[in-house]
Length: 121
Length: 176
Ligand SMILES: [Fe+2]
Ligand SMILES: [Fe+2]
Image (cartoon, rainbow over all chains, first blue to last red; front, side, top):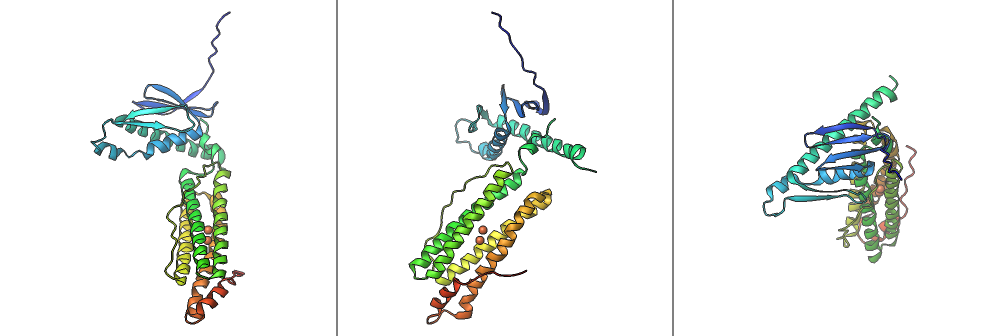
């Protein structure tokens, strides 16, 4: 028998990128792919919001000032989501920047949608 | 690129957070009223105890109304944990003073949500909030009337007994 590898035809649109990573949206799957910390992880709407909340909640200033804490690692675990990140402070800052940029772009996309397709001028 | 977030949820995350805070506030109110009902009952103020039992139920209903609204809008409603409900009050009058304070704080907090909605042009939530503004008009009226009984009747002699009797009769029947 022959092994047939069928590659799904997924269209990715890049939402935002930094030199540390990128976030893509898949319209056909209604989800996002996050390319960060050496892996590509899929997030649906709920999980993306949970990730945003988890990352935004981290007190970066406190992590930087707190010198007693031996490992400078933070584990980002999201309930009912397959992915988990173990990140250093620098990576957390980078992920936060990536997410912030992404949500600004998504908001912009929403405004453009309103203007072009939804609001009768 | 699709506008996925808008398709999933009609609420902005800011408004959703504010409404979740309001859910906690209503749950807190309900717990406070329940505690007041207990205090009044223990101290022989039966009508006031009934009045606060009813208030506690109403607050629970408000909580659920906000809760279901978030869910209807595609958001995440959060069940709040309520702690630090006081058990003792210094006087009969203090109970009603705190009841009024509580209602004022609820009204102010709903006004704050509405202000945010205006800013975001979230007319859907504004329309939903209108029900609560009417309700708060009634709630503050009743709480104020109850407190006024202490001045009108006076606490001397059988005053508190009279006040308690009248608390059960407070109604808001405005046509306005
Ligand atoms: Fe209420
Ligand atoms: Fe109330």
